Amino acid sequence: MVALTRRATLASLAAGIIGVGSAVLLPRIALAKGNIASSPVRLPELRIDTVHLKYSQTSYALETGKYYFWTVSCDGEEEDVGFAAPELFANSWINQIVADDLDIHTSTFSEIVFDDAASFQIQFVPLRPGRFDFYSPGYESHGLKGQVTVD
Image 1 (cartoon, rainbow, N blue to C red):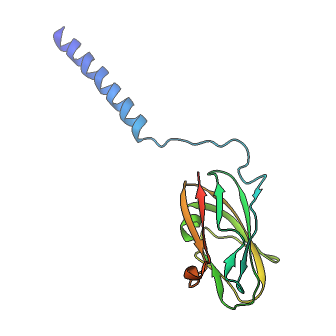
Image 2: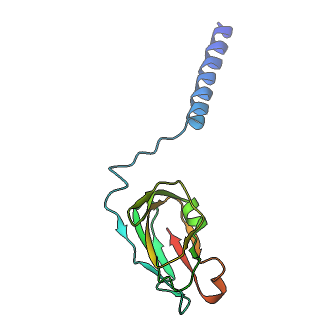
Image 3: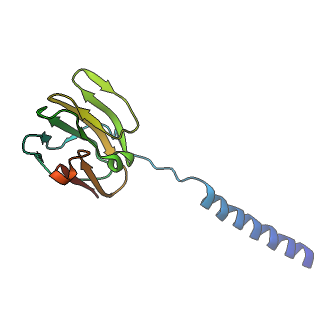
């Protein structure tokens, strides 16, 4: 009778440990309601002025999980001016980049370079909060830099 009680106690304890352990080891399922890539928020356009070396806007405030359309344009007065926000886009889901009639589907990118006057639209969802810099490589010290804050 003592062995049976001990065996029953150990079996019950083992079942509890296995139950708790599997709850910790099993992945948690995140469910989103609706289509996250619908009803985009259109951010104010970022215009790169290469004559005066300034951006039309140097800060943006975004929220995780919202779908954004961000248009970036350049006047084309200076050749080979880029736009980069590598940490922001490494921490975002990018739906696509649209340039004229060209739709580019990519998981990330490091820089887009303007040779002429042009614009493109980045369609993305920030996934992680933080402060992320955007800039024109080589022109940061001249003022072509800004920051996106994601809450």
